[in-house]
Image (cartoon, rainbow, N blue to C red; front, top):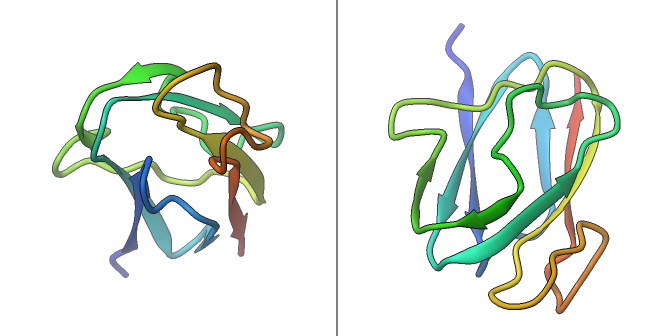
Length: 100
């Protein structure tokens, strides 16, 4: 069964995202350069977008996806300026919740 693609758009429309571990895959669309960071204490995404400055584009690539490996919650942020804090900074703190 093909996976359903969930799209996370940052920094503008991040928000909270719910995913099913066995059915969904993730793409991240960056609309403006921002400072990406995240906290993944449960190893939900073993090969995730590295923390740091990200440029506009699609990650990991146009026909590539992040596949969740475990259930859990990943908090993230991507402020346009300043230091990134995955638990909230300048209205950028959001979560990706994976279950299944």
